[in-house]
Image (cartoon, rainbow, N blue to C red; front, top):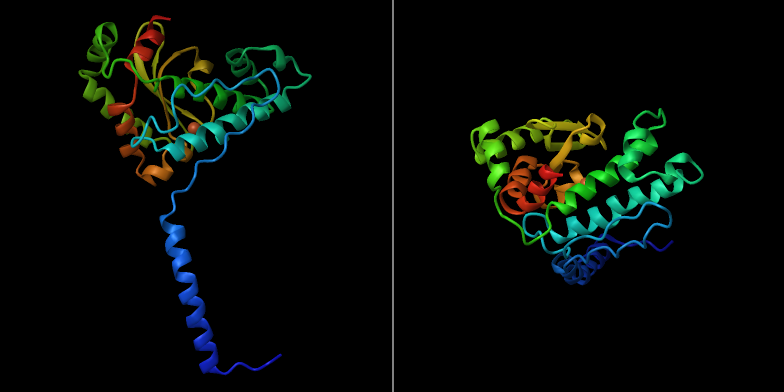
Length: 239
Ligand SMILES: [Fe+2]
């Protein structure tokens, strides 16, 4: 192996650094393209289409976060479900039925994937553009009676979301007579307690980390203040 003296080594390293610098600068300033959408999962469980463009929720939820969460995380739950339920009684159930039935199963793969598939359906739907930007009528009355004001309810949801340890969800739910805020862990949601999901706030890190790093409360507040379609929420209350 040829010997390289110190002067030659320094000169070579400097030249390499000079060559590398433009590439690094270019790499840092190039926008990162969103991931290509995954092909639809074959099987009975179909991921609903995203009801808006991936850019529609920005800057509250960035396009890359939407793309990754919808096309990778959410899509993956259907791929897994279609694979593991093949040939089982679960394959002929609706997704909500599967969530409830799989919650009795010791094998948590069914519940975890079905729960997360359903939770994200609730999640995307509530951001559909075009509806009321604030609660109205019966929903607003219920909020005022229960929490004092809309702002107070939002504060309580933000605070509750801050107490979820690790991955989970914070929900505004209706139990048939009143509305309340509940947290669920992992892929669990209101279906397992028989409550109606009105608003679902995803506090898995994949929902906010690219945009907010560890500032979960900031993300939750921005979601509640800016991108909820309160007509969708009111319709869930009527259902
Ligand atoms: Fe998520």
